[in-house]
Image 1 (cartoon, rainbow, N blue to C red):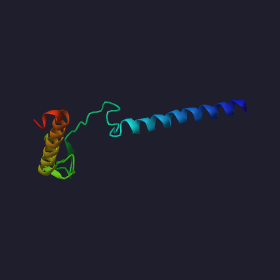
Image 2 (cartoon, rainbow, N blue to C red):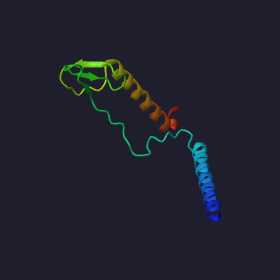
Image 3 (cartoon, rainbow, N blue to C red):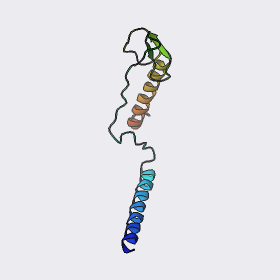
Image 4 (cartoon, rainbow, N blue to C red):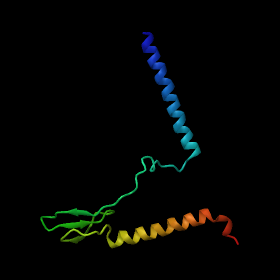
Length: 106
């Protein structure tokens, strides 16, 4: 019985520390998404499906057929490629504005 009480108390302490840590992360780092948790980089590979023996390359974003035939190194369709370029441009501008705020009004 004493062992069971010790286990329950130990679990309560562990859970309270865990909840406190989660609450601290939410308060101190509200924009943190945990994407860097395992140092994983977004690696994108060409998607090649067999398509009844003819072969088809699919867009990594919207999964539409980019081309048919042999495997190529294409990753995105024209629409998604354009969207990614625009998104990358805006992200770069946001970084530059964020890091150069003191130089904006000169």
